[in-house]
Length: 84
Image 1: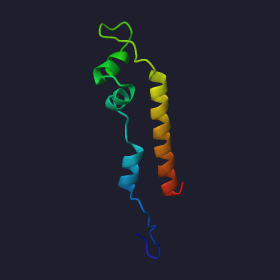
Image 2 (image 1 turned 180 degrees about the vertical axis):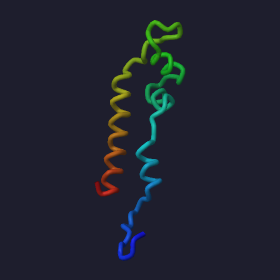
Image 3 (image 1 turned 90 degrees about the vertical axis):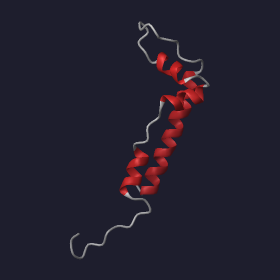
């Protein structure tokens, strides 16, 4: 560090902040919210021509919207905590 430069003290360090930023939604999270199995989610994500393809669960759009709003709120909270 350069002489005379005072480091900015944050409540959160770089590793913690980037860990929160890069948290990823899993098939398990989607399946739990949709009330179906993980394989059902994986099969619904296949190409429709694939042998194991299944239709997406009923109400999938509401489930994805709910999860997207929750993730957006988490990211907004992170931005606020970092002062950005």
